Image 1: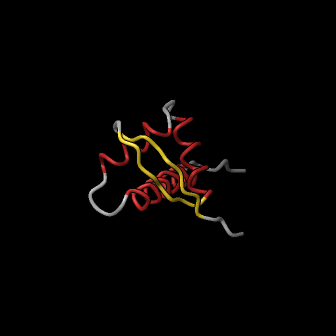
Image 2 (image 1 turned 135 degrees about the horizontal axis):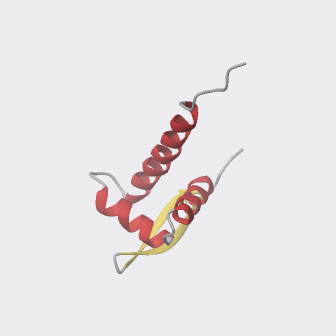
Image 3 (image 1 turned 90 degrees about the vertical axis):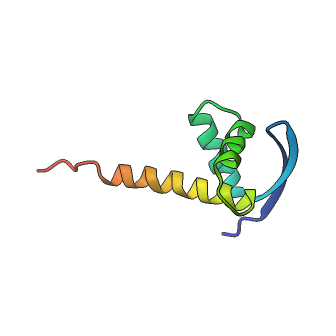
Length: 83
């Protein structure tokens, strides 16, 4: 299934910027920000302030990937019932 790139404007640290992400990454960001009880702008601001290099869109993709990988690994390490 193709996920087209969607360009959106967002305010980060008081500055308006545009971010181009596939819809799946926007949905992931919405889920993460909801679970963390923060706005998308706040979450993007956190990602922006922690990125070491690269552009913001790439940093967001890597953040979302890492978030869900970590969550999947945690779920996979739960002991399975025996019997």
